[in-house]
Amino acid sequence: MSVSPSSPDICAVCGGLPNGRRYGPITCLGCIVFFRRAVQDDKLGKCEKDCLYKNIRDLKFICRSCRLQRCLIAGMNPDAIRLRDKLGPRRPKQTQMDSCSLKTDRDLTSLLVLQKKQRNLHKRYCKPKLNVSETLIMIKQKLYRRASSYDIELVLKIVLILLTASSENYIKAITFRVLRSLGIMSAERKVYEDHNRYLSSNLAASSRLGNHIFELSALLAMSRKLERIPTFFIQDNWHDLMLQDTDILIPGLVDHFLIINETVPASVVPVDFHMVCCIFDDPEKLKNNTDQYLHIKGTHFQSWKYFPRMRNELIGYLKKPTNMHPDLPKSDYLNFLTCIHIRRTDFVGTGSHVPEIDFILSAMKYVEDREKRKGMRMLTVFFGDDISYLESLQNETFVLKTNRVKNLKTESFISKDSPSDSLLFSRHHCDVVMFTAPHSTFGWWMGYFSKGNQVYYTDIRYTNDTAIPQGVLIQDDYFPPHWIPVRYNSRDNATVHETL
Image (cartoon, rainbow, N blue to C red; front, side, top):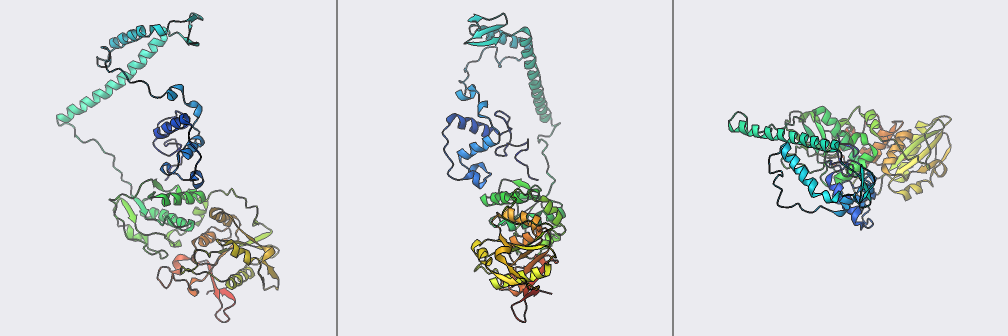
């Protein structure tokens, strides 16, 4: 399970090993030194890389200016930098130590002699220039309280306690060496043994949000089946961005993973598993693998069969929406929303099916005729990556079975939200989802998370998509069984109906 930046066990700025609360929050030594020098220099310019806008986590990828901003956001206080810090390091100590220094036996007599000598040495600094009272003196225009016998006794007690603890550790070390030399104790100290087992994958980190959710959901489900800990290696900047994009939408899913900011160790041998994107590979075959670190070669894991019966759990991991979508209608007792997802730009010419406008309109007509709700406004919300194409669709009309003309100019809306906000909108407001590009993972997750869980999709078997001919997709593995495939009627090749 990943650790949040607010954990008391890590640095509040970079997530590193904590050192202390010198300037406010718990931070590591590197961030403490950087913050002090940055405030002292006061020469940091403006960011030219948009580091904060890109939400880069690893400090080695961001500029000094944005690192200082992270320190300030974490709560580090510039006013906490003391004068001693601003003056820099102290002068080096004298090479010749006093005869009663630490070279001598550390007993009470030596400490008393040392204390008396130090008092005499610094007596001239304690001579008051102005007697304010018997207990207060003024030195360099500042008031100081004279040390009482209680103060001196307290300091000596503290020193004795520290010496006692130090001597105990020294005695333990000597005893260990003696016993080891006599052969009574093994020379090897006890080493912590990790009996946990781990599961990780290559991951298609450079892909989009839909692929990310497929991979992490499948790995979580498989790790439970194999009794392993799901592990995420941040191997490069793509993996870091994948983690951030997924965490923005579904943080509860990311929290299940052990996140390691390193590459996969060279000693770990990858195992062939799920070598095709959209065909289910049974994890049972991995149960006989006894490797502590099981790293599988496969990516994408685009099959609902990896995480069956997990829909309600995954929905519970979604973040609470902060975007109220002021430009879009809301699903309620008056409005029934059909959400249409159309993916075009990166699918054109790649072998993935991109539907024509006639099919889209016929499919919309079929879905609305079938899902008609009496006494409710049937509204449409378009989602997609080609806004100009969606705007052209709003100029279209079609006639429903009731002979009513559906005018998309007045009865449809276009979402221009981010991918994560669009999926959250589907979760709370999409009563029906229709995704027209059957191989679109984003459309797939719009249907999976949708409020109504009523999903239509273009039957990929009756399209020019190359996934099935190439043997990289099995329809029953990719689409849940209760989703409804639609295609053109073979008699007229114009009307759309459900594939039976």
